[in-house]
Length: 88
Image 1 (cartoon, one colour):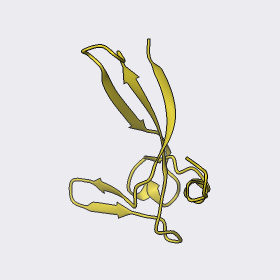
Image 2 (cartoon, rainbow, N blue to C red; image 1 turned 135 degrees about the vertical axis):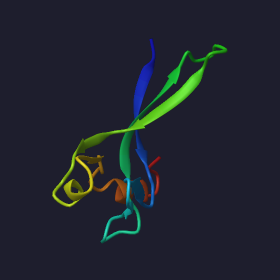
Image 3 (cartoon, rainbow, N blue to C red; image 1 turned 180 degrees about the horizontal axis):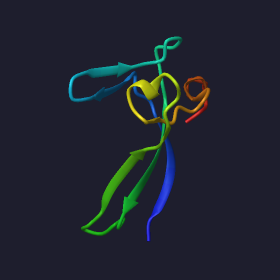
Image 4 (cartoon, rainbow, N blue to C red; image 1 turned 90 degrees about the horizontal axis):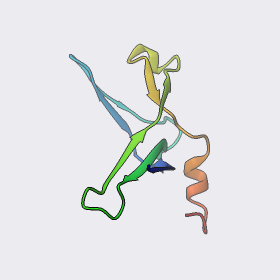
C-alpha cells in the first residue's frame, strides 16, 4: 500500500519535442506557471524505498490541440496563492 499526495510543480515553461519541431510553451501574461501533479513514496522506510511523481494531464485546449492531444493541468491562481506570505 502507498499514499498519494497532490503537488503543484512550478516550471517557467514546458518544452515538447516532435519529430521535426521543439516547442517551448509559456503563459503569455505571466512569467510563472504551475502544473498539477501527484507524488508518492513507495515502500517507505525499507531498502526498496522510492519516490515518484507524475504531472496530471487533460485534453488539449484549442491552442495546444495544434501541437498535441493532451496538455498539463494548469491550476488557476496557483502561482498567486503560492507567492502569498504564510502559504507553504
